[in-house]
Length: 65
Image (cartoon, rainbow, N blue to C red):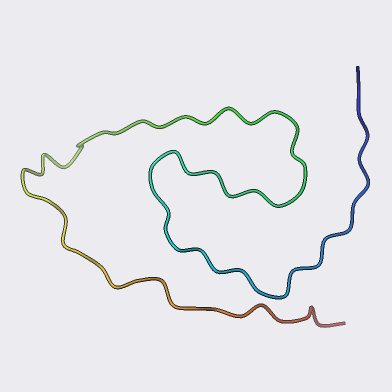
């Protein structure tokens, strides 16, 4: 069974509190999503990564004509 979706999405503000491995951020329909998370230590690191400041709040603006 096939579904054909026509949609219009208007987003004024998006606030994302956190992103981690295997996170999926989706707006609208994308059919089938198969999340995959692969973790590799290609640099041979042995200590935890330093902490970072939170992502700042970024308001979305209207597209320019």
